[in-house]
Image (tube, rainbow, N blue to C red):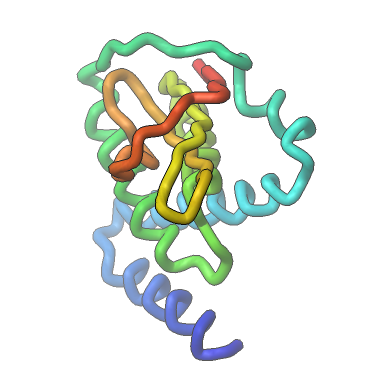
Length: 153
């Protein structure tokens, strides 16, 4: 391993072992889902789209109080572990990984695919929403035009 790839992995291992007991399981689950999502996006999008949920569907913009703590933990675990993968875990990988974790817990969510303009030209972005909250991808300041959405509930 080179220093470039070994450093994030080392910090990820340290982060994992320093975490409280209940978060270790969630960190491991997030890491494995990030790996699975990264492999998944190597396929043509037409092959993975059916697994993302109902095309052009949307889940309700209603927060369920019983889900809020789980949403916080999953969003945080994805955010932390995506910084410690030795592969690129960009917005689509994070969104798919979080979607899988929410689906496993029977929590509704919608994956949005958008296009926007930046100084460098057109850029694509993926966001994952559950209720009124963005679990991944909501931290970007650019305005995006939604070109696709997938509801999983």
